[in-house]
Length: 235
Image 1 (cartoon, helix red, strand yellow):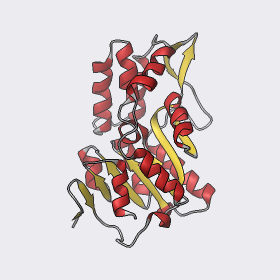
Image 2 (spheres, helix red, strand yellow):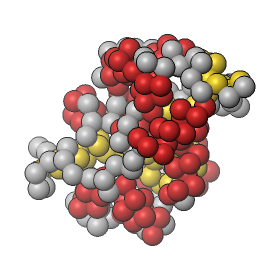
Image 3 (cartoon, helix red, strand yellow):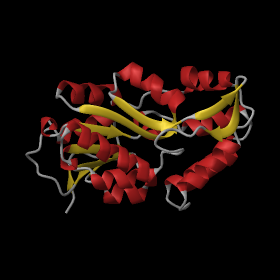
Image 4 (cartoon, one colour):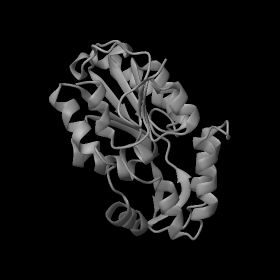
């Protein structure tokens, strides 16, 4: 049975003696997990299309759209013509770290864990978060920009064109192999359906203010409070 800690924190199926230092890698989803927004929705606001894009985002995160890649391409296509300056506004005026993010990342780094952001979002934001938080590695999608405006397309990268759930899982396992560790020594933190593949591969899965299907399958569900509540479980 799930064990309730204080209100809003549910833990099930883990060894209560586990400590943070027993793990060697932590992988974070970005949008609505590490940060407070869905970046694609906020960029869409600059094009007057936020409601349309947000509806697709919500359906994808709930798992109602089976093909995440198709859903992302549809959303990105609606961003065609948005100036790059709009992304700067999202970064500087709308994007904030979720409560407890800096504390959890700092604690993981102090305990010797490698840190990773794996996101269906965009390199524009993951690169900046990597620099801000000292994150070791990232994997996300690159928006195509021509003459200072988004084209509505994504740039092909060496590993593929879209970081979806399968790519998040593959990247987590790739980093485990590079570190010479077992996936059981990895933590995966997310909130949406496309985080489930990496969460199922990791030794510890953490749902942060997540969709119901994700909360139900996670070993730790943080339903109130900040990301640092994981430190109540792994001291």
